[in-house]
Length: 146
Image 1 (spheres, one colour):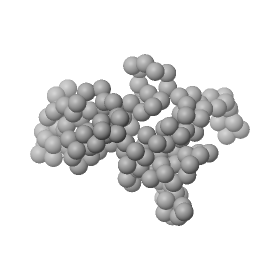
Image 2: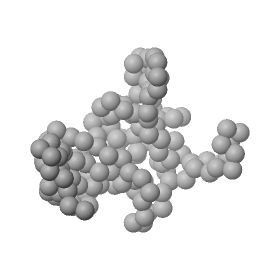
Image 3: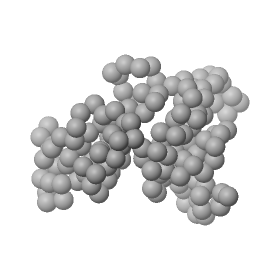
Image 4: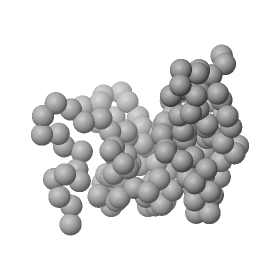
């Protein structure tokens, strides 16, 4: 049963969520629950998955509505052009990477040492890019090369 604390509804101030336009809600919902360890809060219309201290909201695309005139929502084209991505921070990137691969996640590379952090990227079922990183050198004032 969903409780008010499970939903992205602030008691005061604001809550930041991330909305994804997806091709297949069930497939994307499973990905965020299984790979990122999220909790499904709402199955559909929209699907909401609570991941750590945030929420991912997913719905299929659609045309303009009265509150967003002239705007059409579509999932990303599958190519190498990206304008934004989800950034996930983990305590142990090796353990996260191994568990995600065992569940079927496909990463672009293994975690790479960028001096400030260890990081790697994967795509969700719709092609959204997700960065997974673990702070290392950054915690000691060491930054990545430009």
